[in-house]
Length: 190
Image (cartoon, rainbow, N blue to C red; front, side, top):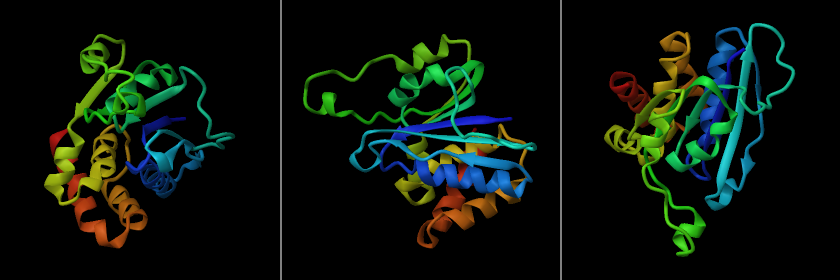
């Protein structure tokens, strides 16, 4: 049963990402459970969403410590904060974008340095990407979430058309073209 933790900062589109992944899994014949968003999604705070799916019955969307097969991180510090949920040898797909949390913005703390290097030394499969650059190339900085879905799609054995349909059904119509382009750019880059 694949278990995916999506983590990021409020406003990055983690909820849309969980909907796309859930819709794709349903189209592929899986039973799917998606958690509610945890955190301060409206205020730029940390956000976590769980997505679990299986050919059998999924009882709960919640993923225990060390239970996630994949950690899909929309921001690099949030990736580090959520590492305890990723199983040993699991896969971390991380956007290298840095979004300063409130203590950094207010001058009470400094944004940690060397996060990617620290992750590279761990017993995980790591893929990093500058998702914001690819999203801008696709036509919308809001497409960071779909860039990450494009990378994730390479780790899940779903038909490409399933992904495209799930994006089309979930994304706002005015952003559909940019989202589909972001998905394709990520597939090509990853």
